[in-house]
Length: 259
Image (cartoon, rainbow, N blue to C red; front, side):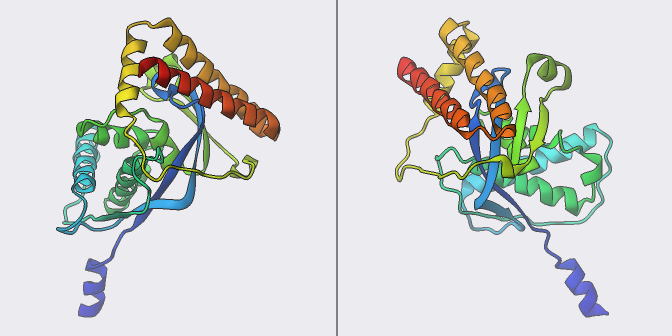
C-alpha cells in the first residue's frame, strides 16, 4: 500500500508542444489579419518538472505561465486544489529560427497545469493561446497570437484576427483544417540566424503611425491567407506556392524599407 501511494505521489504529468511554421499571412496576426499556420513533430518543447539547473530564460517562462494561470483562475473563480508540483523543460527547437520555441515551452507548461489541477474543461481551448501570450508579454516578448494558437490546437489552423473579433472577443476565430491538405514541404533554416526583433518593432511602429505602405502590405498579406485557405481546400498547390512566394516578397520589402 505504501509503495502504491508513493508511486502516485511521484506521478509525472508530461506534455509536448511542437514547433510552428507560419505558412501564410504572417505577421498579420498583430494587424487584424488572417494567417494559416501548422505544427510539425520534428522539433518540440517538453515540460514536466523543474530542476535547479537549466536555461534561465526557459525557467522564467515557466514561472510566468504559473503566475498568469493562477491569476486567470482567481479572476474567473476557478478553484485550484492544494498540493505542490515541480516543473522542468527540455527543448530541441532551434533558437531564433521563427519556429516559436519560447511559446512551445509555455504552451506545454500550461497543459501540465490544466491536467494537474484538473481544470482543462473549465478553460476553453480558444482562451488558452491568450494565456500563453500573456505569460510571454510579462517577460517583454513582443508577439501576436498566431504561434500560440497553432501550438495549442496543433496541426493546421486558419485564424481570423479581424478587428471586430479582437475588439469584441479579445481573440480571433480559429478553424482547424485537415493536415493532409498540405503538400510535401521542406524546412530550410540558417545555421547562424540574426535577431529579427528590431525589424519587427519598427514595422509595428510605422503601422501605428498610419504608414500607408505598411498598412496596405499587411492587408495584402492577410488576403494571401484567405486565398491560401481556398487553395488548400481545393488542393491547388501551384496557386499555394505563388501565394507563399508573394508573402515572402512582401516581408522582404518591409525589412528593406525599415532597415
